[in-house]
Image (cartoon, rainbow over the protein chains, first blue to last red):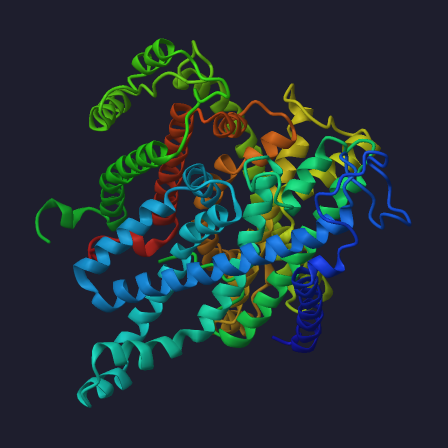
Length: 281
Length: 320
């Protein structure tokens, strides 16, 4: 692409922004001016000011503090579910692609069933069972998004399986484990990294959407989507309560996606960047 | 393969294969939701105060919750085959089927309007961007696509409500009472998918434009209109069509946020209420209807694709 320099700069800015958000998340207890659940009944729904830089919500809780703790929740949830999903997907995709034949067929058709339902719907069904705490949410997110990774890995395995260097390795007596770990996995690190980087914002988006409609993370946990839900009722007269978390969500997801696009351009030059999604099996 | 199957167009074979395969998919979805809902802790009748045991027993008997699980499962499947989705736990005197029959058309209308917007904005935007790759139009389109892709739909909806409803008073901020009420929710629903379609269209068109035969056409001095219509769009749009089916499904099933935002009485809003109330039959019913919509949408796309792609139309030389 001719716009390499521009892309580079945009990706750099996104990286810095994400670094700041990540730092804020890590240092939340030291950075936040108030505890995330401290209510100040004398200062409900305050506009941004000296005491509360970003204002307060309808219970008088400091929005900046909740925002910082919310970053912690979003980052934890996004990164851990993406990592778990990637690991699950690698295992399943490797098994399916490497074993091939009937097993492959069966395993892929099972994936079709999961694909027959929208992600958010599945996540909702799973949270009904797993609970709406942080762990339950992470588990539900991972259990849904590994499917994409599995398909990707399987495709890569099928593509690489007949390569000459694998025949050579086999001829030299390499076992299955060695072939998979040494000869297959390292070859797909690029695409895997790209998928991983797109899974994180997808998880953050899913959680905040569910929390916004009131069926995501249960209330004591400070979640950006939950904050937006709090602000929704006061939209008309106190729009800052909803705008603050909305901007945080939008910026986080946007920067992750820009970074993912950049990685995709860099690591998968063959594949045009269409947001890292695979449209076919 | 021999016999009559050989003479059928591959598209028809594919269609039959998909139709046959969609039944076990639906059965698995039904079973999966049944299992999940039975694993879920607590039920709609768990209240803070404990009911007298006789009343609990009565309620359980009414909804057959006192039977063994296998029996419940068999009853559930039997009802499904007859198209009966069972009674709602929450809305005591209504069937899940009735509720869905009322809410589904609303979601379909919303989804269809959003789908039209998605195709218009997505394919149009993608074509504009691909007109001159690297130009400011292209970069602007790409940036707004990334933006549209990254903004959660509730953020888009809130923005639209704040600006176009509360400030400008162009459109009503909520409810579902006529054509003017459809604009903001449809737009909210469509922006994300449109961004995705735009990126796909652009990538596909640029891909085709780089092909040898297109360059030959250009070198021959064919007018740009001919290049676009009979070269670029003809070869570049089919991949976009494949994504439109899942997109339609996403629009019909993904509308619950938008229905929540704009207080629209569609399936999604009932679904959210059902989840909050642990109204399991309603949750299962809505899930199944969604699965049917998605399976059907994919079937339609396969059909369309078979019709668009000449390779799928010719006789049997490609077989299966």
